[in-house]
Length: 332
Image (cartoon, rainbow, N blue to C red; front, side, top):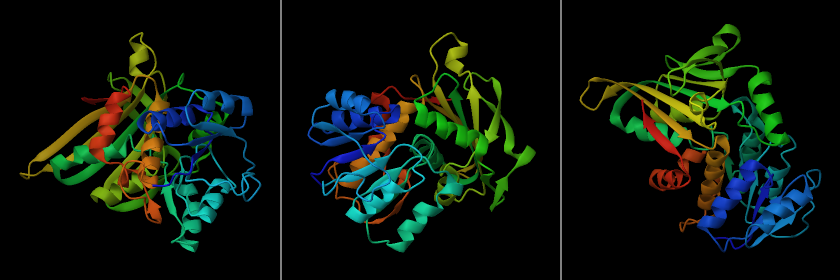
């Protein structure tokens, strides 16, 4: 386990604050560097955490403006189109996780890894809410001997907003992504035009217009289960809790179909939700992936490789922490 600090680039944002708090709660002695666009905000976040320090990074500099300062891992919590954090982490030989690039955008990260595969761990963190979809879906899949289809429907409440970086990311995800990957009858296809439109049912049964999306969950779940049909759709609007007059929440509806272990048809429908929205779950996934990568969780530090978060998150530990922060799993 490295004794060097974990660098959270974007650490003063909402995801960064959650990730930092979860890391601090689980590992009181782990040093953290909080890097944000606004030094005062970064200072405020660091001030509320023991063994944390605010830093300013320069994404145009090879050393991020940190000089020779040692770092144990790097998390990039916004769209880093320069790959500055990744280049820095690879040069230092330390783990890196980013949570922004969709499937059609991971080429630079994968290319960097292929160029020097022994340099350090690279975690492709853009599973929806960093494991909050894949980990539960794979747990539910254990009831099946064969999966025929996996359909994921995510709902973001339109009041579930973050800072400027998250706003820009959501705009890119929902309006500028040219196509969305899905798997149909065993073939990977790109959904465009009318095929990229869908209707989902929220937890309360309300039908909502949705758009196809390509987080890493599509490929990850297809490869992990060999399900021939996998799709992901995203809706934004009023969440089920807010329709009841309660505060907004975030919802992930996971529908599985196939055969059980006795060869009988089986369909399951579950929901993953958090009453405070998307950011606590994203922060938890980032924190637990960093804990595994650095060995903070008590295991050996992660060897060099290319990873999805679900490969790193122990299901039992994840569900325990998920419940502790207020997450709920519902059978529909």
